[in-house]
Picture 1: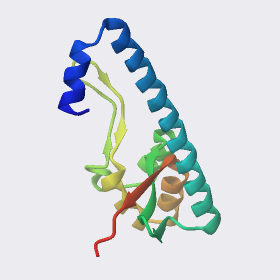
Picture 2: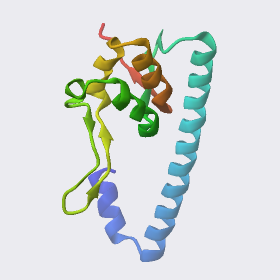
Picture 3: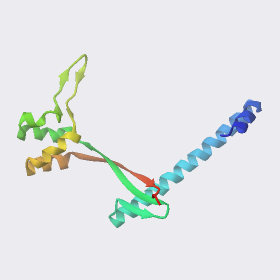
Picture 4: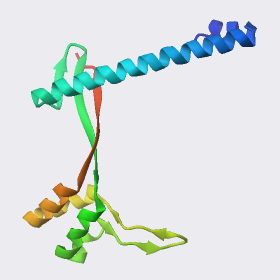
Amino acid sequence: MRLDAAEAVRDATLDEVVAELVDIRERLKAMQEAEYLLCRQIIETMEDDGSERMRTEAGIVTISRSVAYDAAILAGLREITDPADLAGVYYPEHEEVRQVPERWNMSTGRKLLKHSADHAGIIEDAKIFGSPKVKIEKEAR
């Protein structure tokens, strides 16, 4: 919003400002819905092509997904891994001021993939993929 537009709002009546706000929120909602539909179309097209990264005229399009892990499945790693190898990866349930649940740091824990096929299988089975996100970067020319 420009400064002159902001000053014009100061001079408007409450009814005018409320009407403007309602209009802006409706346009914003419509734009968010349009963005969602466009992102879905990009994701579906790229997934059909088997691509996570594509070059377009508008820039480089990347699909990224967050990954979480199912702690119940990762629990199998405790049975087949030396506790020393779990240092910095696994934090058992413990009590501080409140009960703190067990926690897995899989950024560090990915090193356990090298231990055995069982380790790799458990880690792969525990993955929970988040919703894909579309990122568009301008190419340096």
